[in-house]
Each structure stands twice: as C-alpha cells, then as structure tokens.
Image 1 (cartoon, one colour):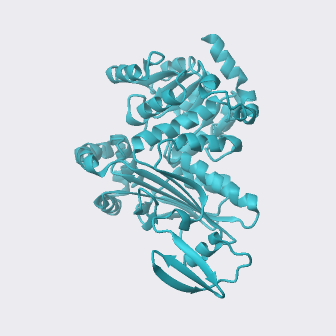
Image 2: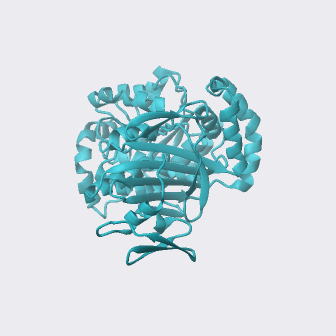
Image 3: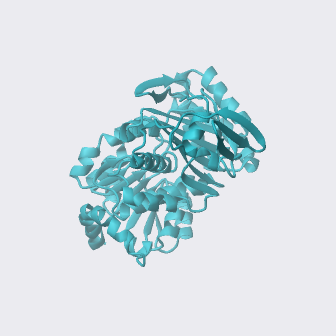
Length: 461
C-alpha cells in the first residue's frame, strides 16, 4: 500500500499537466487511470455519502472505497453492497488524531458528513492537508466554503489538491456557469453581465433529514447577491420567480437563498450581477418555508439544536409527502451578456439521491485523474477543474439525467418553445399558436439569443 500512496501523492503535481494527453487515449479506461487508489467517504452511511460510494464503484470498479461513519451496522451493509474491495471504517471527525491517522492511509477523502452550516472549523480539510491527502467536500454553506478557501496556500505548500462545494448544487452548477461564461467570452461579442442560478427539488429530494436541516438553517441567513458589481443583502425566501426548467420539470416557483456559488461565481468568473434561487414541491412547502422565514426570528433559525428539533418534528410528514412528490431535481443556469446574448444550461434528473452521488463521484474522479492543482479551489476555478476536463466531468455527472443541455438560447429548451420570425421591421413570436407582433430592435446581424433577450421586456436579479 505504501507504494501506491507514494505513487499518487508524489506524482500529483505532474498529473495535472497530462490531463489533456490522457483524454486522447480513448482506449485507456477509467479503471486503469484510477486503479488501486483508496478513497475514504466520510458520511458514507448517509444518503449523500452512500450514493457517492455507489456511483464511484460503478464509474471505477477497481477503486478501493472505504465507507467512513459511526454506525458499524449500516457501514458494513454499505461496504458489502459495494463489493469485496470496500470496507467500513469507523470514523469520528471530531477525533482529530484518529481522523488524521485514517487519512494517512488513503489517496482521497470525500467529505459528505453535513450539514456544513455553522461548522466553526474545517476539521477534515485541515487533517487532509497535514496527511497530504487529496480532498473534496459537498459543502453548501457560504461561510464554510470561504473558510475552506482560506487554506489554499497551506494546501498548495503541502502539495494537496482540494475542491470545496463539489457536489451537485453547488458543484455541477458552478462548472455549468463557468462553461457558459467561457463560451460567451470566446465569441468576444459582449461581456457577461448577469448570472442566475435556479434550483428545484421535489420534496426533500429523498436525501432525508440533512437537506431539511440545511434548508431550515439557510432561512436564518440574509441572502447575499450582487447587482452591477455591488454586494446586496436580501430577505431569505423572497423575490419569487417562476422559472421554466424545461422537459420533465416544467415551470416552478423559486425563491432567493444564501448559497456559496453566488459569491464564488462573482469573484472567480467576474460576472457583476449574480443571484441564486431554490424552490420545492408540493407548492405548500414553499409557502411554509416563506412563512418560517417571515415569522420565526433569525436567531431561532440559526440555532442548530432548535433546528434539529424542527427537523424531528417535520421529518415524518416530509417522508410521507415524499412518497408521492418524488425526488426530481433540476438546475437551470442563465447567463445574459451586454450584446443581448442569453444562454442557458439545464440539468434535470428523476432522483436527487442518485444525481448528487454521481455528481460528487465525478469530482472525485477528476481529482484522482490529475485535473486539480495543489491548493483549495471552487469548481469554477481552472485550478480546480481544468478547462479541458470540464466536459468530461459534466458528462459523467449527467449520467441518468432526463434533460441535460448546455449553451442554448432559452426559447430552444423551455417547455413551450418560441419560434421567432423577422419580417421587415417586425418580429412575429409564435408561442404555441399565440402570435404576438413586436417592433424589431435595431440589431445588426441579429441572432435568436439577441432577440430572446430583447423580448423578455425587463431585467431583474
């Protein structure tokens, strides 16, 4: 085993330089590139960690997966499900010395033991840096993500590659946004001006109390967004928009939440206006969340003990509703540019519990294959996921989706597609047999993206 660890940890710096070369080796399988690597999944007995373990074992069967957690019965059952190369490891992330000793014997740790809200320290990341072990987490908390980012220099000095917020949203959504921005800038016809993240999950998404606790804790945080380069704070679960998620999901109401991809995308991608929204189903859950944000004091919603009590109270009801609500999930990322260009990325899946595991596994493989440079990175940073590795990551994450499209104008992917026809000085917009006549804007060499942006009629966060 020592030889394997030496091989991976010492060769990590040069692996990133050969990612592109590896992509050309069509006959080289994922299994060969990641053979004999040992991956520890913290929270491996939970819904997210367990889903990640299953996805990793399918994508790269030769990986040795260690299921880390406190429940030996559940852990052993999960390890048996994964196969003979997997085993359960009892890990308490609060026992720093034991944690570091465990990390010394693995090549990569996947931290899925949330919720991450109000965690005062990045215990696992710090231990990984000391153990010189690669790291990825599924953090969905702004403060935690930036705290993790503050260890970038220490990780680089220790030659440790690390990605924070490497799940589905944030995570895959960040990479989608980065690719939309890159494509827009490559055309050099306008500057990215507005980036909007919209998320939808039916019920609890099948991932149980953790996502419920996360949602309640987020209701206690002021929403940070950016408008024309200025940071603004807004009330949580306000600013409702009706967003069309396209095939399989259709139109859904989404509400402002404080999510880490807003600040990271603003800083990393340089887009002046950025916001993120989330909505759920059935519709009355949205009303309940809105009421909680309005009626309950923020101090109450920031108290983890009280929130856990709320979760215990609501969990039976949520599980009962989940039985008929399903767990469909969708991401929509909108990018608007100064020249009227408006492009969209959509990612929709029937089961969040599967999608989040597949997404996290895609990030884990990207690190193992050498895409990530030493340091701590957000997914949209090229040091985190190299540009040439983004397509591979998105394709892996999109396995099993019911709808995955990138870099399309909205009218091509929404539930009721529009047909735009210019005749003389007028544009005729055919929206499912409703013909509307609009005066044509003065655009030289117009394209559908420009027209769609012009016809929207208004702009908002």
